[in-house]
Image 1 (cartoon, rainbow over the protein chains, first blue to last red):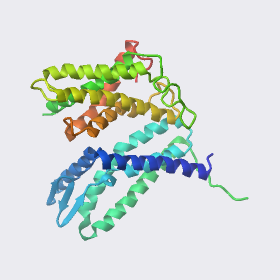
Image 2 (cartoon, chains in turn blue, green):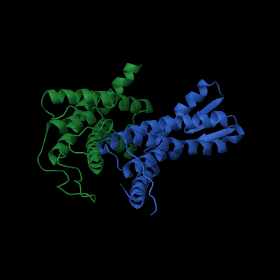
Image 3 (cartoon, each protein chain N blue to C red):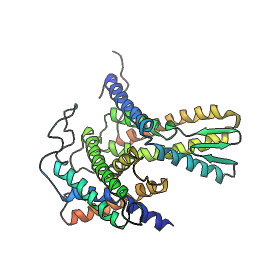
Image 4 (tube, rainbow over the protein chains, first blue to last red):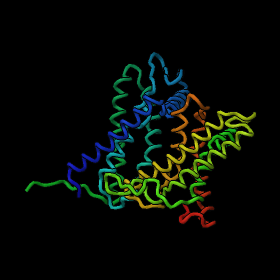
Length: 164
Length: 175
């Protein structure tokens, strides 16, 4: 068992370190550029395959009248930071597998974001901002879903503390 | 075209591969972290990372790049000092990434030699690419397709080469 204070402490420690690390290395060194390029090019190719009038200029995808620039947060690093924080803070029966789950989630987060950008642009139209936010909430649900699935596979149960 | 991409990608990243492999073959005794413990009370890097291993990795990775430069590195077509700088960055980055991987493993209380799929195969590649992107103004960057190829191919090469090293009794574990 871990107390809520300890859980939140560990979660925010790992989440903050990863979140700041990814944003800092991108801001100062442009290190996430290949990742942003990958998301931009993959989303552009998927939209083109859907026969939509799409164009790509650098990291900006234009469809109809809407332009969408791929920034750091569009690459999956935020979802990854949340997932890593959650799993690190949770005591599991098979502790040794944690790191493998976290590493395996990284490519999944990137692919999900390719889908997120593609879906937002292809379905967006006038509602692009609404869809953008909705898909972000879905990303959080995806993270939570995978987290809970891993806990279930591991046999870990989350006990609700009852007041005496 | 795919074969071309594969060859160019492997040619580009070869100093990092050599650095990582050298560290497996050449062992030292003195730990890189001087036996220092981290805030969590666990070893900073662990006994698996030694000073000799780290610097021999950098040296042999660099030398591989120098040899490559004689043929033309990162692109064929004659010797270039840029290739030598690139090799040094890739070799140092590979060893840095390998150490960073160990640091993360120790934080999760994983013991020396314990398998961590994907992290074991990608840590040195991420380190190598990280160095290249930090000093991107001075060296040739790999294309996006080359980065993807390297990331996809490396786990397979890493597993195969480690299995061979295990069979040759150079490693205690086949990963």
